Image (tube, rainbow, N blue to C red; front, side, top):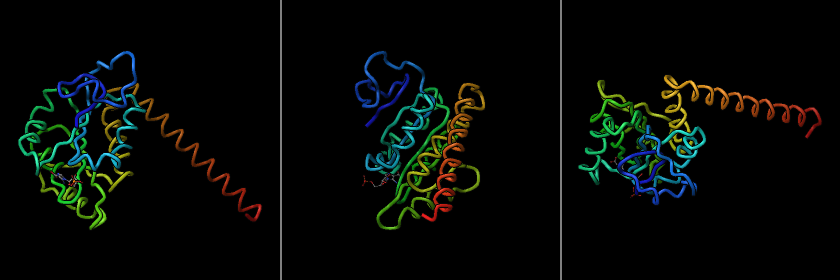
Length: 195
Ligand code: C2R
């Protein structure tokens, strides 16, 4: 599976179900998302949705360090040349994908541990986060929260050199604050009325 938004050699436009009809998105992709299996996609979808929301061009592929080591090597070693600025690597179980990617590129790698049926994702978390000194993987939480935060962290890194994106992340935070305040108001009203 390969799909994406923006310009990039790996992507067939017709392979992207999220691409709206009309003008194709020809911007250069800056985030490369890899997952160990297509079975990870439902959890990782939050990451794709948020990058869409922030209008960040990305590409997404199934790449496995275990099952397709040559492809993983090729992906990571060409990532910088292809214009990618950040990699998001999601994998479950013996989750070596993010670490292998990080070992083969100097682009920042964000690791997203996938939940697993047998060990609840603790296996994925430990194998993603416990990198030896020298090869960092910025590891986020297990599952959907991690998928969301991987996108937000990528946006924040990109916003270091993109003022528009900075304003969008500030607006996103302001909206989050507004929603929390609203929830608190509702809670206080319910408590006051004895509900
Ligand atoms: P299947 O559902 O395809 O059997 O995959 C995937 O990320 C997935 O969560 C089960 C799990 O195996 C993981 N996987 C890895 C790697 N490749 C696949 N952890 C890797 O290279 O690290």
